[in-house]
Length: 116
Image: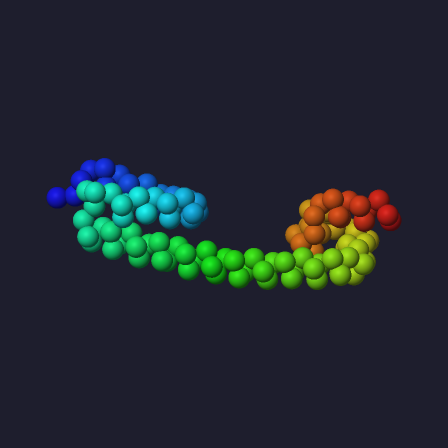
C-alpha cells in the first residue's frame, strides 16, 4: 500500500508540472525519490518525469536562443516596421489591429502615430 504522504507529494509534483513550474516540479519529484515511503515504482516514475522535464527545459533553452535572433532582426527592421505602421494608419486601421498585425508594442505604434 502506498504511503499517503507519497501520494500527496506525487500529486503536488504533477500540479506544479501542469501549472508550468517545471523547476519546482523537478524539486518535488526529487523529494519523491528521496522519500523513505516511496516504492521503487514511484521512484522510477519520478525519475522518468525528471528526465522528461529536463528535456523540455533544454528544448525551451534552444527556442530561447531563437527568440534572441528574432529580437536582433526586429531591431534591424525598425524603419521597415515604421513605414508599415504608417501605411496601416493611413488606411484607417486602429492601433490595436496594427499591434496584432505587426507584432510591435503599443508604444511603438503610438510613437509612429505621433510622428505622422
